[in-house]
Image (cartoon, rainbow, N blue to C red):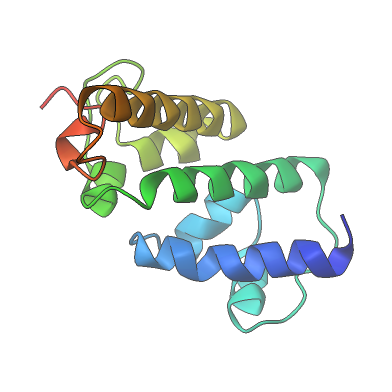
Length: 136
């Protein structure tokens, strides 16, 4: 992956997560970047070299964003405390900030499982927000 393509990935990711209600500071925590570097990406500028950890976070956040796209309730689901396993009363965003890459992997798996279940149970309505994993 070239530096330019990494920059383009982050530049595309920043506005997507703004749509989901995540602040620049929150994006910085999720991406493992400073707020300044997130702002640079939002302005279409290079964020500089990324560590393997940061590249992994970018890839996972892209997957999570695309998994959330079909759901009408994605913003609320990300921010809402959830007692369902594996969230233990935390919101998915809070879990991601607290536990980093392992939490991002779990959130990706939960969303993948929810999408699979929704397609099996309601193939005519995959956008049903009730299919997002929650105990509420």
